[in-house]
Image (tube, rainbow, N blue to C red):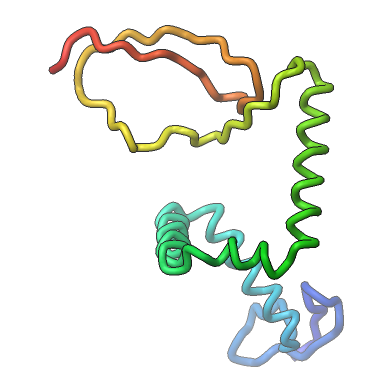
Length: 148
């Protein structure tokens, strides 16, 4: 079988005869790159896989609640670098016209189910909130008109 060029390192390799479409050589780093690419594609295209990965991360965080506190204690240089980067981001946001107030940082999926909204008729009133929001964010005040 003809040699192929590895999609990760670019070296020539002889593919295994039982893997006709092999694109990566057997080097450990190349196989790691292959698995990372597979996972990135799977996370992008498979909602079930994405949900399972999120649930696994949540279980791990619940089982290791002290991890980040301990990490910050063991790596003060990393902690300080992160704080300085956040200060720089805050300065850039203020300079971009957010006024003198501290920035409001909003995530795209900001809604949480801590206070569920039950069936009923609601009035949604737009609210102008200064700060940073994603382009698809719409801030409203929700008033209950009648419960179902």
